[in-house]
Amino acid sequence: MESTAAQNPNWLELPPEVTASILHRLGAIELLETAQKVCTPWRNICKDPAMWRTVDMRNSGDTDPYDLENLTMHAVDLSRGQLEGINIENFASDQLLLYIADRSSQLKRLRLVHCKEDISPEAFSEAFKKLPLLEELHLYFTAFDKGDIEVAGRFCTLLKSFKLNRQAYKHPGKCDDEALAIAESMPKLRHLQLFGSMMTDNGLCAILDKCPHLESLDLRQCFNVCLAGDVWTRCFAQIKDLKLPFDSTDGYGFDTELLDSEKFDSDFDESEGSWSELSDVGMLYDEVDYDDLTDDYLDYDDYTDPNHPDYW
Image 1 (cartoon, rainbow, N blue to C red):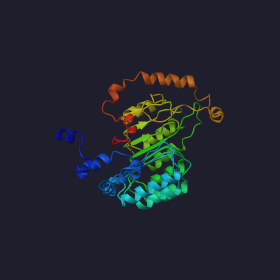
Image 2: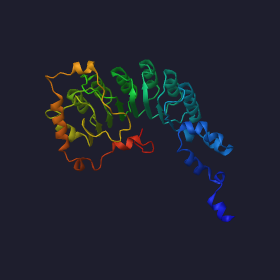
Image 3: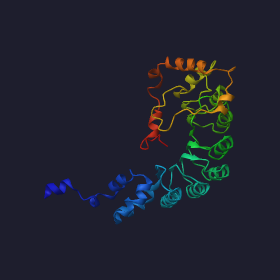
Image 4: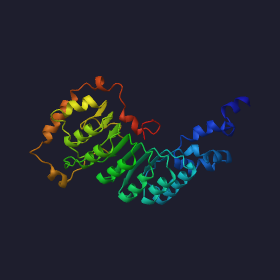
């Protein structure tokens, strides 16, 4: 009997702090829809605001967005103003973002994935005014333009990490508007990821000029960045962890297939460069011994692990 009891411990007899640590490994959806309904002790633990300082609403995209919004609002309510980090994937709305901002003045980390054009510039602007402590803003496949960047930088003056990642085109048009907005409005950045950006060397130079604290910079699939002239030297002199346009996308965690578009193909100026020339730049990248340059640097592959401190 004793042997059987040892092999099948009574989970309800675990100390509350141990149970809380175990339950905290679940996502917010599992906590709200399953764990808190198991028994009264678990329900009481799930009501503790400390359980909701970080809310991960990761989902497959199959759940009704209306249900996901209601669950998110419930999680925000349970945090009782202590929410510090939230991840929203495959759903969003103006109403939800403002609900979060109105009740989460301590928010430091906001991550939006595949929210497309679900949030308006007006909602972003109103929300950022209420999030003065925001330090990390990570956006994947979410509409966010120059004006939104300027507003975020104006009201969220503590921003240290910014990601604006999109699916890249084979022949991208050239546009430095977003890079220039980042340079002018986010001077305290330490980490910047612009996967699939259309910026050129000019936009990159503006960022290097105006963001002196920048430590890590991810330029993967930014195919207009050629690192011509002294730009190459400046990047390696200023940036500790540098990902270049042709670097491997392994570990990125999202679709990296390049898109074809006649519109963007027609915008590609052959007089300013060609894909064969860019390929030569890629070969030059390959000659760099990254082992000597990045031994102590952050690994962006870790950013796709929700249990890693840099995930957010």
